Length: 592
Image (cartoon, rainbow, N blue to C red):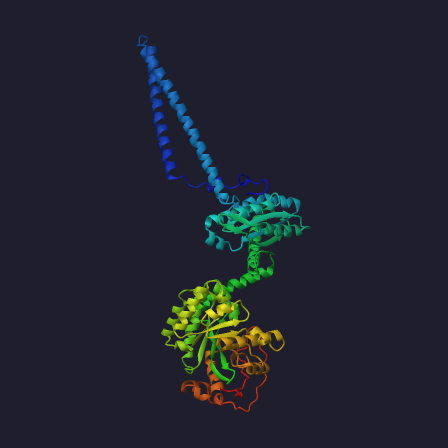
């Protein structure tokens, strides 16, 4: 499908370069025809020589018999018939060759599924359009279009339905494009459109983009599929081209910019369009640098586990640590997991990264007191891995780490999708003695029926609910409701984000919790955990080797008379790992 009067034959290309090599059978037919033609040519030469000889003989010997002339006439007529037949065959063969060459050329320039131009021909096809834009001083706009979630349609309904949907999408897009525009299918479910518009009326392109989004969303019913597609668009524009020699680089640059805008459009929600800005280019380059850095950083050991203390708020005693990933990047500095974990999930590096971090955490935890637990977070991508439980249990076996000391935290987002697979995973871990915690409870979509079916040992409230208790009565009511729910289901409650003494007092009065937050200490590298263990459990909790490392000045136990000091404010962005915990343990009146 092409808009306007443009046809593939109008594109000035090297035709010879676009004609594929003839097949082996075609070569055989041509060879047989050439051999026949050669044989006939030899026969004609012999007959001509014979006729000439006969005529010469009769002119010299007039008394030659009469049958010789009749024989020559018959031979000449036969030769004429054979020659005509050969000419017809050769003409037909040449016609077939021309048709095959034209078909091959057309296939090389167009997409066979939709009839649009393809990636190879979109540049030459836009030359005429750019020349007209230069003459009229029009601006150039490029629209990149991508069908959202097209892979799901292919996987669910089959490639036949997917092809039908692509043809429908191409027809609808082509129907709203202005006359003279160029449309191409670049591959898969991605299309590109090139058009001109008056520079004083850029809103025309916005209106066209909205039309494309609306047309694509029209419901479709075909071969078992009934629904609608959504598309994401990326737009880029340029002022009128000044030199014809610069047209092709201009189109390439606009296609790249529109592709960058398309990426941002899909990233920010899909079913919309965005114009290209220079900030998008910078963000995409930064993203590419992060991806390359993650892959290289895993091999170089730049990812290390940090540990944040977890306390029993009722007795104010240390019960374990939560492992939090950090990236010591030589290019970007110290990065928190919110920056690199989503990217690692998208590029398929999360499993390797998790194995490195959890393996190191298991080795670090070997030096702790045996009653201290280690909590690790797992990604939704890992939950979908049917072999994850076996991999984790094997890590524990390799590192000789007791499974009863390990707690796996799973966020509510992990429960979406294959709930049966999640139940199987949790059951495998729980049967081997691993504790399970539902993380970020209250901010996702976990239903009470799912909570009842899943074998969690603990639920952890999202930090947003906990930190908002002082200012938001609704947040406080939700926390109190979850506490009541936990008591009724015999599920202990954990909280995070405890950053002030007032919040700590509120939680201690509300019930028995496990808690963590900056009031107890920021996440620290493995070498600093000895100080935290000493602070909360006393020097007797450390082996002799660790006591020698931290020195005698750091192992003086705090007295119960010391007041709880106001902690330093939690820094934004990357936390300052040098913040010392300002919480001093005090035994509550309801101490167990």
